[in-house]
Amino acid sequence: MIDHPRIPLAGVIGSPVAHSRSPRLHMHWLHRYGIPGHYIPMDVAQNDLREILAALPKAGFVGVNVTIPHKETVLALADVVTDRAALIGAANTLIFRKDGRIHADNTDGYGFIANLRQNASDWNPTSGPAAVVGAGGAARAVVASLIEVGTPEIRLVNRTRARAEALRQEFGAKIIVHDWVQAGNMLEGCATVVNASSLGMEGKPEFRVPLDALPKGAVVTDLVYTPLRTRLLEEAADIGCKTVDGLGMLIHQAAPAFERWFGTRPDVDQATRDAVLRT
Ligand code: NAP
Image (cartoon, rainbow, N blue to C red; front, top):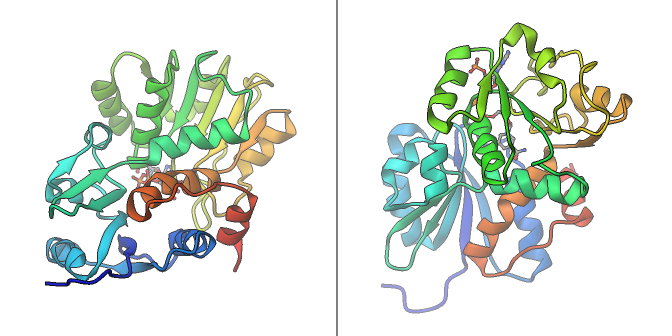
């Protein structure tokens, strides 16, 4: 039994995690707000997940972020799952409560919307359809949050069409699944375009879709943030669209977790971005 105050610890659990920018982000906020905590990357194999999650609170951990490949698995290991995490089918944030229970949440959808609201202040998600590329975990969070903010129609494409169809089954008739090879056609009249696939990421093929049909007033965002300016964002900016990179989403999704763990709501500003980008 520990009877003195401990240094609060948090971290990210995944495999691999060496590439994660979350340690830089949370350590920046900890220093900035004078909180004597630490945030640690932890490479954890699937077989060890249950044991590690049970042990971490005993070592002073107040919670963890969860990344690939554990985002879905942790739902079954949590005692409380928020509605949005259940809807998305994945958690990115765990809170170790004082009563010993593990609380699982998903803040990706919040981060996605907050990033657009901060960096495209004129964005109106209700003013027209959204086009979403991808049907993985991130796309599920994007689709759920777009529905929540009142987007009237979501046009969805994915390389594996069956995964997009599965999203339609789950999220309902606002989702219209389009053909992968005709992705450009779905852009006509769209207010929002989102790349929620890993295309365009360093080491992955480029995302190549003709943007001719896209209205100039559309807001285009990419969840990929390595590189920061993806080909999609460059091409959209060239035709006069407002573009928003994915780094803001990464930072915004982290803010509510930091607040729950360490008790301070952190600012999301240029200094935060600079800290994350610093090599
Ligand atoms: P995921 O569950 O593994 O899904 C990957 C998605 O990308 C699937 O739709 C997959 O299509 C598609 N894809 C992968 N390789 C492809 C290729 N060569 N051609 C066409 N489609 C391809 O991953 P995720 O968690 O959804 O993440 C997706 C992206 O979002 C990643 O780049 C991730 O880093 C980024 N992300 C960013 C943030 C942020 O805060 N900015 C948060 C979460 C994720 P199939 O279904 O056909 O395989």
